[in-house]
Amino acid sequence: MTQTHVPVIAIHGGAGTISAATTSPEQAQAYHDALNQIVAAAQAVLLKGASALDAACLAVEMLEECPLFNAGHGAVFTHDETHELDAAVMNGATLAAGAIAGVCHVRRPVRAARAVLEDGAHVLLAGAGAEAFAREHGLEMVEPSFFSTEARRQQLYRVRDTGRVVTDHDGASMTATAATSAAAAAPLDEDRKMGTVGAVALDMHGHLAAATSTGGMTNKRVGRIGDSPLIGAGTYADDRTAAVSCTGSGEMFIRVAAAYDVCARMAYGGATLEAATHAVVQQSLPAIGGTGGLIAVDRHGNLSLAFNTEGMYRGHARGNEAPQTAIFA
Ligand code: ASP
Image (cartoon, rainbow, N blue to C red; front, side):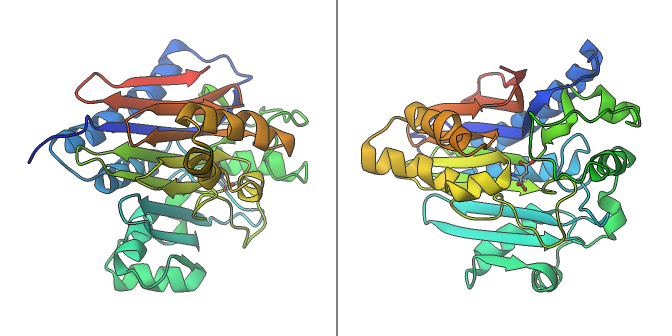
């Protein structure tokens, strides 16, 4: 197997504002450690020749299983105190894509999205049909309570009282007095954080892939679907341009077709990855009140980890270089 490209992996664990609570170095370190470990795992498989799709799915699966992030175990609650999880994956080599929305029994939603991609008949399955599909494909199913954490429940109670869906980082303050220590300890304010997880990768064969998984927004209406599982909005990959995974106020990312817009600016306008992500994150999204960020890698291995919030949990690694992780700007 000839190595023609230096593989690149990048991940995110959501964007948001700096926590009102004082973050101790130990607390921040827990996030850095989790991000580091996940980047390293994906990097290791890429260096062994794995596909970008496999590496991106592995990273997202590990992020789903980590309760620090709002996907899988640790997902946020809907207004009705339930969970509805969304996920998507896309293969830049073939433009094949798979996504699921509004599931509450699939342990690793990204695996279900991957199964939809492999199956090939459809791109997006929602609700009971998506769950039946996951079951038929032998994926692990769990009780919805598997996803619940006390920190997320308290977060819902605080937010529900305000009648708002948490999409506004700059909105009215919500005191976190009832926060559990875990929530209060997070470097980003748990009440004003987009906790979606995602990964983008370039493999040594020159192929790109993106994967995204989320519990959505705290206090969202039952049935609401965000940008994450919508191909072109929260997730997109095309070998000719870039792989993109977004996190933020989903409705705005849908309205500007954020992930696809990055690729379109490169394809039609000849923009660099940096210029394309800057235009989307710092101009198109803020113009309609959109907050959040995205991670993107292009076919040359350029990386962009862009956000218009105070921070975004993120990490990346190139070739066999040591993984780098960051939370704030
Ligand atoms: N974009 C996600 C959604 O709207 C939320 C997030 O990024 O945390 O569902």
